[in-house]
Image (cartoon, rainbow over all chains, first blue to last red; front, side):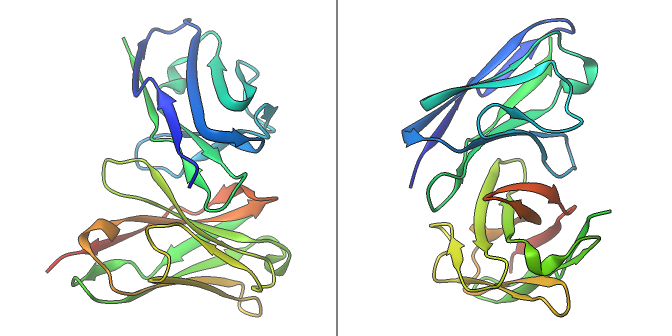
Length: 106
Length: 117
């Protein structure tokens, strides 16, 4: 199985900050997605194909990377952005998720 | 609009079985693959499996392979997850999600499965 390792596990930030979450794959992949999840809710797809922003997702979210290292960047954090974030490789079966990053208000 | 509703969750004893359902509406169900994803209480997301649009190909996560079976009834617009030999580690909220390519787009709100004696 491809292991997906996210860092950091927890991130403390303030409204207006720029933050970056990293996801490393145990082998080279092409297909990667990022999800946002709020407590008690289903995950919401933000980005797929590593950098393709989904319709309706604010442009302050962006994804980049290739091979084994990928990043999710949020510029100018808004109050609604404090949530958990997961990367997801759908390159090779079985598909796998990163362990998640909890973005907390400082 | 796309709507996915999971049902069938509940409390089951260790070693027992349970079948979850996911009722789909608002799109042509037979045109889309479907995923199951689960989340243990306070933990991260775990991919359970995927069934192709016509049911011919199914794929499973390593921790459930051989114990769980995904199926679908395209005439009823319903996805299923048969779970056998359940253990405490299977306690989780189970989500169904529509496949877009091999990624996902729409998700249900989940159904809770608790494995406990």
